[in-house]
Length: 333
Ligand code: DGY
Image 1 (cartoon, rainbow, N blue to C red):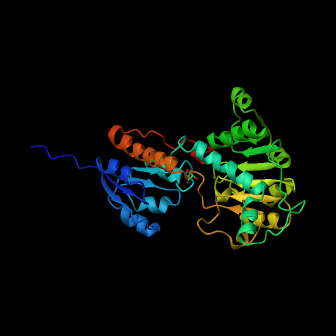
Image 2: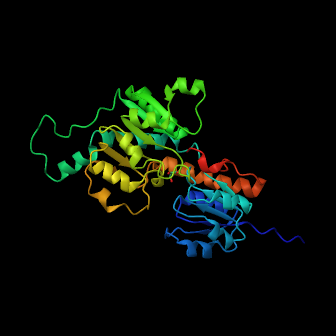
Image 3: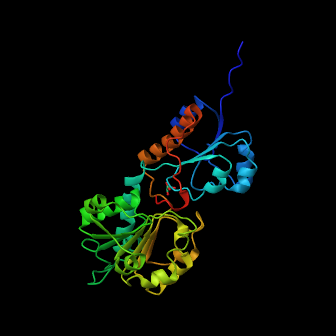
C-alpha cells in the first residue's frame, strides 16, 4: 500500500479572510495566526519551523537572518504589491520563490492616492478637526483656503500601474497636466492615452503642484525625497506618499512642512510603521492615514486570494503566478 504524500505545510503570518484560510486548508497543513498577534522575528522563526510556505504581509520582515533559520521554506507569498519587506537577493540565493499581488489593488490604491491629494490640498483634515472642536465660528474670505486641484500640474514619481492610475484620475477627472519621472519611460501610446509627459527628476520637483509618490522603495529610492528635493518644490506644492515611508526623509519633510518649504502633505506610509513621528502628529498641514490605500474589503479579499493562488500554483505546478519581477529591487509598484 502506498503511503500518502504528506501535504505541504504553510504558515499564514497574520489574520486573513476565513474563506481564504478554508481554501488553503483544503490543500495544505495550515498554521494560521488568526489571533492576529504581530509576530516578531523570533516568533516568526519559531512558527516557520517545518513550514514550506508562508503567506506574509507588508509588515513581516523576511531577511537573510530569518531565512538562515528556516531551512524548509520554499515560497513566500506576500499579500501586498510592494515587497520591500522581502530580501529578494537572499531569497533567490537560497532558491526561495517570492510572490506579490500586482494588478488587483491598482485602482483602489490610486483612488486613495487621489483622496489624500484632495485632502492635503484642500485642507480636509484640518477643516474637519476645526469643526469637531467647535472652532468654526464665522465665514472669512481666506478661511481654510487651500490649493487648487483641477487644472493644476500633477507629478508622479514611479509610473507603474498605480502611478498610471493616479495620473489617469488627474488628467481625465480633474483636467490636470500630468508629468512623471520613472526608472522606465512609458511607451508613446501609453503616454498619449493619459496623457503624461516624461521629465527629469528636477523638473518633476520644480513643476509639480501636487507630487504623488508611487515608486518602489529600494536602496536606490531610499530618502529620494530629502531636504534638497523638497527645497526644489513649490512653496504651494503638496506631497502625497502612497509608496513606502522610506522613500521620504521624514525629518526633512517635517522641517519642510513646518517652515513653509511646501504647503501640505498626505501620508499613508511612514518610516517606522505603525509608529508615526510625534512631530507629524502636531503639524496641521499633513493628513495622516494608517497604510490603508488598498483597504477596501473587495480589494483586500482579491489580494488574499491571489497570495493563496500563488501558494497553490507553486505547490501544484512548481510555478507561482505572480512572482516578484527581476530585477526586483527597482521595479515600480
Ligand atoms: C501594497 O500592497 O504594497 C500596499 O502598500 C499594502 O501593503
